[in-house]
Image 1 (tube, rainbow, N blue to C red):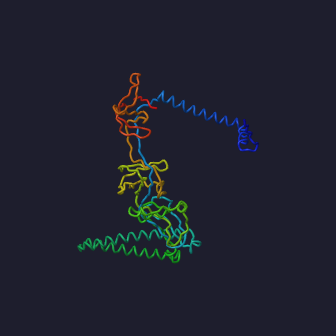
Image 2: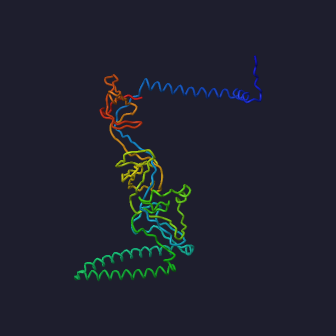
Image 3: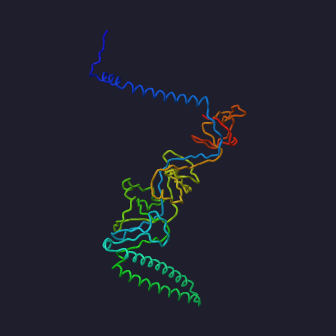
Length: 378
């Protein structure tokens, strides 16, 4: 009979030697794994033979789907007129009024020598010039309206004369302000610009390349890479002539294009909720495309958490139901009796038929049970 002897330098011999050295830790780990398995088996057995008790309460269940979201907004992009510096007069993401100054741009040629007092003077003059231009434009509209009526009445002639005098006075004030600005900074209109919002909106310097998208062009837009999008998150005061540096979101609503995964066919909802960073945003359904894979919603909050995003993934809650709620595991279904739950009537467990209105993996909305009824579930 042959006997096999392990060579001391063989792989199996080294393994046996290592096992003797770590025998106690290995046995401890094996014992711990056995106890965990035994605990799980005991818990499963208790849950089977001793079901838990819950009560019928009032609640809501939700159905959702992960979607890819693209945000479309009405955004006016601001372009730098020259190389220079941008000094913000409002905070990032601030809501601004029409006629409010948001930033001043200063040419790189005069930036080092332009003192704060001169900047304040130019800012005041530029803002007043903007207001004068608005007033003159309104007078021109009124004069045009009078010319269209052309009734030659005494009242209309007096009003036309008054408006003409007001316009002449405004033009004289404008010329005087332009001369004053020239004494502060030579050729100031080529070296200084006050950026004023011409309509209410939200001011932002976070450009991502999707500012010109609309419902017809969004399908051809490619999101920038992560490194490129990260470069747009910080604001640089340096300006390059002809380059975009900021934007004004001019409407208090935005369109969200939600792309459903392939193979998912759902009925479009009238309203929905979008979950972003543990926050819920209410959406109103707008339309769907011919494939029913793109849902269009409008969102009216323009929350900063959404303004920072252009393309992202989020959880869309497209349907919710509220009513009497029970755990889904409490339901049992049979062909003859339909859906039933087990409850206690005078100390005796009995199945009671219910109508299931809606259900998901965790909960079910039912009819046929009073609020507060004790039920059993596993």
